[in-house]
Image (cartoon, rainbow, N blue to C red; front, side, top):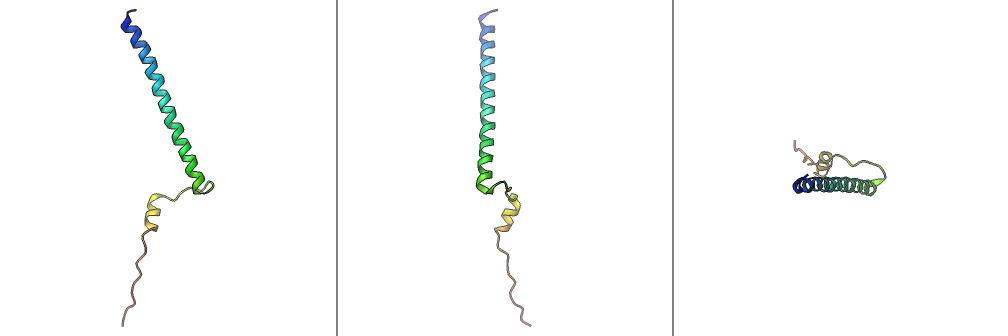
Length: 68
């Protein structure tokens, strides 16, 4: 075993632990964010899809009276 092999082995172990910790932190952050959004939107009700919400904000055009 030379020094290069030992350094590579240690670095590989450290990098894998760092990557795993980062992935776990990201998953936990997303889980906490989704739980907080669920509470603020109203006790377990799901939000309407984005397309429906976008359409409902556009006011409908009323037709004028026809003269005849």
